[in-house]
Image 1 (tube, rainbow, N blue to C red):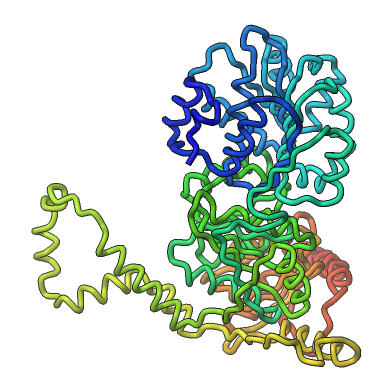
Image 2: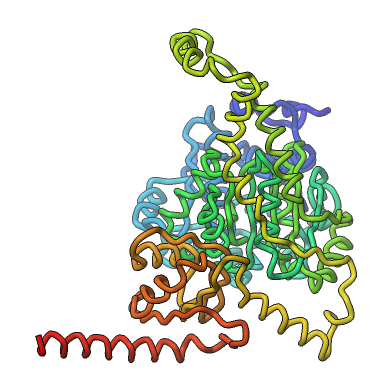
Length: 583
């Protein structure tokens, strides 16, 4: 295998990357570094995230900088703030032993005045998001006349995010005799157009095959009824004891809803989407990178720039419309030679899209049944046994306390002691799966009733009826707020805790619809819960609540009940005032 020295990387850079644990070049680095060092022609690099792209372009970019001249000589464009910061941080690490080199990330959401001050002091490498860079160009702060190298990282994602006009504008400010490198995980027509317009004699370097997923990734799908997707998700998570995963959802609302449900059900999970403030996003990403948080529920855009090498799973809570988005998602696991798993939880109407993804990425998905409770519990127990076997015991520290604890537990047999250790870890799991809700598995081929016409309509109505039906021993409760009001599982729990007096209400299944919500609670709590919620508020909206009926169509009912709740509330205030006067 070629070494970094043989590729032409100088000693100062080699010293820094060796300290970072780089031993041998990765395939993309072997192909890209010599081309960029020579600066002969442009390059289109087709490679997945996590294949070593940043070092592939970063090392030659740094090496070609004239540190005696404090003017921008290299420009790197990235689609998101997070990726921009990630690249700038990596370049700073690579250039640890390169004196007088200044790398500056410029991006929205941070003080533009601070970035302007840094630019005026002089920098040689700018890593930028398109919007903020155009702002700085228009202010006359950034001059790109001396730029000899331009890197477009994750070009397909930049185009997906609508940056095509911004790229056109920026590239007009850069000398025509520059070297341009464009990295993309996929090669849609729009990326090809950019390459044709702004690159000359471009060499195409492909790591793997065009639009191919990462080599070490196993692709699995579970097919369930749409109403059972969340239950299937929980079982998949429970069946992976050491999971470190991103769950991808298509919308911000779905992302928040799924995260809220997981948190409510006792999982260590958080949401990452564009409605969070930058400070909130930074905190969530730091917790996830540090593995304090094992499960992240995210939108595709929000997860950009979240660069981690040891994800065990990527879970698609439904398939994306664009195959390239699936390629990006699955490419986040199976990095650096490690194995990874990309899971899709789908219903029968998504089967066609699954086959299209298979065709384009050149890989087959494995079909699996959702894990059974018995299988999950057995797997978790064996995982605990494995952890007990491998745990390091600090003998000297433990010995100080061992005699007293041993004496206290001496009446227990070995079997009793082991059972109690297992119960401490598994009581919640055992209790949940003792009465686990049923998941209806559906066949590979959808039935005729699912394909169209009147039968398909009847199938849909049955699904709505199921949504209105409570689990055994539970009552189904209706409230007139839903996702369109910004109402999610966490808000429901807070509303109940705040308004329902007495013993805390245990919440079962939750179905969040655009203008209403249905949820299960124990039958004995139904009357006091409905009474307590009537007239309460959610961000100024009066709540109306009732025990749900299987025969009632609740779609569109939320708006009518808002008016009814306001009227009932007004009447109750008037009645209270009249009582006070009579008194």
